[in-house]
Length: 276
Image (tube, rainbow, N blue to C red; front, side, top):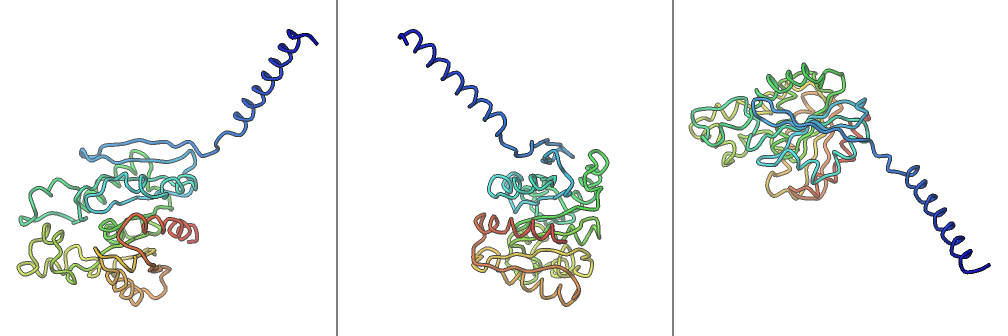
């Protein structure tokens, strides 16, 4: 075989191998579901909607912590990726410095008045998404929140009855009376010394615990230095006595008030939802 023939043969082999490589790429491509993403504005408040082609598992309302971006659940944990692959649609409102108060008061810090309230979530955002997109219209609706967002999970559940199937609340605080020096509560409701009854009865998850009609996965890290774990332990104990037949659970594990802990609970939360 002369040099020219050898060169042609070599080129043919290379070409054949290239075709095999391309075919392998085509038929072994990533099978991760295509993610659909849209941001809608409701009263100028951005709300992200994220899903795959399959949304048969239901809708999850994801609530951020105080002054956390709505994107941090997706950016800093595996929840969004795993939930979308499992067939959930995710709804993520920008809550800013909201503490999920039902409304604001003359004593509320003026620079916080622009942030969404519990009333906006329940009476404006949810009905809008139901009518416009069919979101939260199925019998499979879920709530997930961390830190102040966990407080929001319980308060939304107490306000909406059985609209949601279940919730998951991580690192939350549920009775402001036990934290009289809480600057966030003071910034919205005024000082406890002047407005003790307001602190006790307005937007207090423990005060309204009888209104809670859905099971919730409660989680808290034992070394949480920002929101002490006894907040969740105390609320869960009270809740269990009020609803002894509830499927709610409480999981306490080592960790802090951070995304390392919150991410460690992702599989537990999704398994809990799937098991109901």
